[in-house]
Length: 104
Image 1 (cartoon, one colour):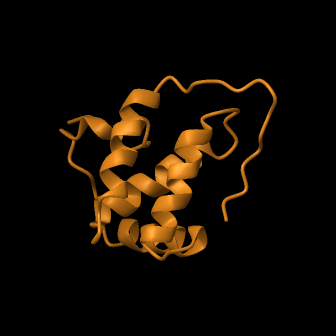
Image 2 (cartoon, rainbow, N blue to C red):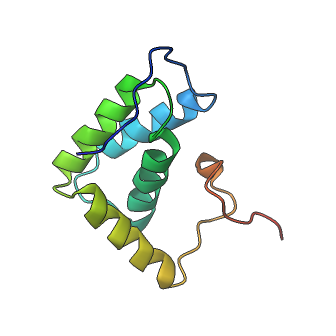
């Protein structure tokens, strides 16, 4: 189970709309691809200590259960994916804030 820091003054994240679309697409994935695992892991990190966004946090929990993977297993898997020279496409606008270099 993901441990989130809940605060009394809940906020809406600036990337809520984009992230909600990603979450909704992940919920429907029966066989996630590498990019799906990467997306879920980065969204967990983004919302981990964010005050609010209970709906997105609950959806993340649902996805982990649906995919039958724990947060630790997910992070191990994504670390392995990145170590095999995985690089997301620079044209993937959904990866805003992922920390990868988009320069040419």
